[in-house]
Image (tube, rainbow, N blue to C red; front, side):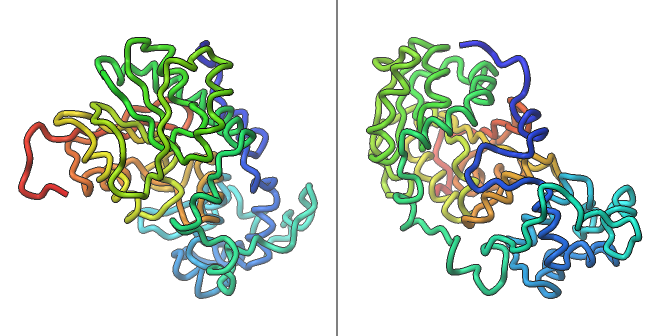
Length: 344
């Protein structure tokens, strides 16, 4: 399998998309900010997410999503105190009071009605994702699995070739989808025992994707609901969870990582592979766009420090970060060699 010569996220930034079905042109994110009064707010004074919610129809998820995209586009900046303001470079063209204001004339033509998930009155009705809804949301159709592979495999190849998985004897790819990580891992490490675990509806559609790469007999398949406790998985010395935790709030993420902790042998490692915010949560743009999509379902993108906090809360120690491709990085940690008094 070749190593991609150019980062996929840079192409997607140029196209203004993320290969997600909910993606909209970037001009529409900006027009929603205007329609909801957010551009006017940030052009007058620095604001917090809470102030944005009180002064507009936005809920917290919607304010975080739209302010993040504005920062990714460099129309807004996030200050050291956590407040958002219009950038000086954008003031002439994106301040509604400016005679050079351009938002009403952008193409594609502005979509005047924002998605329901960002508006206060509808936040609990349309886009709410719960753990009980998970099987229907991630049913694992062949088309969806193939889309996940196209979207995630380039960064997963970079993760596999980072050297992080040398010496691992048995690795479980939790919520592994169509094998975007398991396929290149099995090709790179033919002696490693590789197990892909996902919902039953997804697992039944994976073999066709394995066959395309000649790894049908190299990867074991296990049906697993990541939120069902305890996990019915063999003991292993490595667990990989890629582009999954961004779909959920912190508490269920900690529960998932605690289940991983329970299945790992002492000294075993966990790797989370996610698209990260920079420490100031104002970029890169591709992460801001993913965050906007995840906010629609109750999740969010996180900084490396936030993911390290989830791993620490689950009992892991010595977290560290390994960049892979674009905004993706491995956030890893180790299960202690001996039990501690505060075991989860």
